[in-house]
Image (tube, one colour):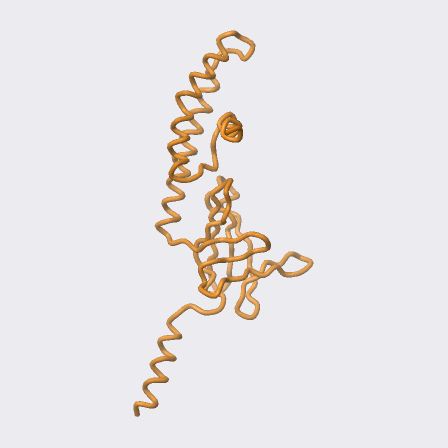
Length: 179
């Protein structure tokens, strides 16, 4: 009897874990030093989909691409062939072409989304105040522009100490690239 129970128990416990394409489902953060990119792979009605960047704005954050399952792996169909999505043995790293992603949990994804919302809000406020600057040809323009930068750029700096902002003023990006 013991000989039957132990193998059955091992089989049942191993069946509870995700296997094959199910291991891909979840949120994946790209290893990228310029932007914060989070992709979501999900399964709906037996089909797998990927949203390439849920942190993006508008339609880009909603665009889904169908993935195919082949031999327990997910692949993109490129029209001229398939590009496989490869998982590390531990299932925590995803490799797609030359990019790599780390699996993150829902709370990390939510933290990233909330952070980017703060970045967008600050960027929108900066853009709105930029529209109120004097004429670019006037002598007052440069002083007003510098005052605006002194008001907002430290706030961007503080936000980016926590994590990168995808949306930030061009002036700020230029200033940071010179450092």
